[in-house]
Image (cartoon, rainbow, N blue to C red; front, top):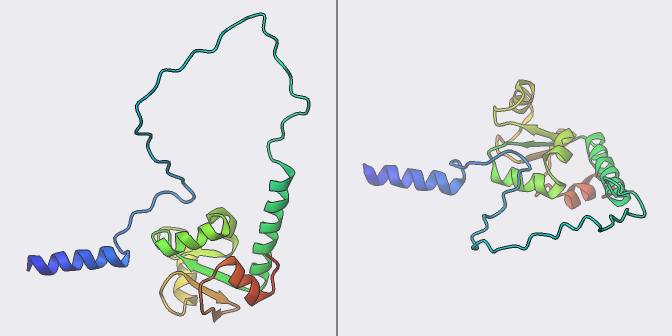
Length: 162
């Protein structure tokens, strides 16, 4: 009997059912295991002049703003084309797909969390609209999209510019 329980636990872990995932878009940095080294204190010379930067530092460079506009435009185009991604906050493949788009906040307009842990309306839509009951599931205008829903694949399938 113990062997059966052990096999079931291993099978569930292998299938990803037993999976812990932290907050969305959280990055975990590896711990620094090196020994601390002594650092020199900077000299505090009161006669030293402070140099003002020639141009004020911008919080967001123009390239990032333009890139965000392009990504948001792409996601809006996918939404207009009827793309819906059904996923789950506990699904490793869904987390990978979210990262391909730049994170949950970016893909959120076309993403429904079907884990039952999110918004009740989303969970109800998942029950009513999903065709396979497996996540991630991608539909375009109610039709099941066959294949991985990468930005490139959905751009090709919908004609949206990436």
